[in-house]
Length: 328
Image (tube, rainbow, N blue to C red; front, side):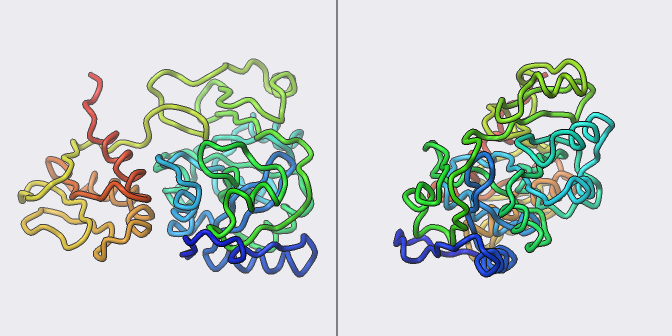
């Protein structure tokens, strides 16, 4: 997995989008490294979506304070729909608008190989097929779904050239595949099809008019209090059903322990985020841990302290949301 945290642009390879460059980029992604690549919308910061540690590296490189769901990129609709459940609306939209700047949020299949961190622990996943020759060639070469938010530091302007990426992320990632300027220049449209209504979560390169012409009316925005399903939305993430107690220094036998570092004694069930207190490992295992402990038959989850540095900021944000008072 990527460990390049010293800001030195010489550490980031600038690859041409020829056969050799695409092969090198694909190899790095399969090894768990981070590679930025151009699409028709903006440059994405790619990681193997099935590798939780690689996905955690995206959040570390971007400096994201929260674990937002990430969009998975595929080389075909057929490949995407092996990981998510497509209804008739999705099939119609994919046939007409993929490849293209449209992202669909759909339920995960039970055997979906995508890391839970990629979708922020939710039972849905955002997927798309980009309309860019180099991106599609890269995705075919990788042979796995590639998670890719915009390739910029969190809060900064999305990049539309390789040089934009290097100015923000040079030295933080393994490589940039330079495929020239992006033709659309704005992010993809995100459409939630996980429920009975089609809901526009983010406007973008595919127009609402084009979508409605194919599947009928689209609602604007998300339901207040609904789970966050795409980038750019403000809402809560997956929350366990059990109450969560933060900064635990002791634990009882009827509690499940979410451990970070040497585990506290006495818990009825334990899930270890990282025995060596590695924040990247902890981020990669966080959502799996919450789900495992939620089903452990205990009265609550005791979470050991995690430092508020680096990825610890995002981990603590997620834990604080999980521990927040529940609406009744």
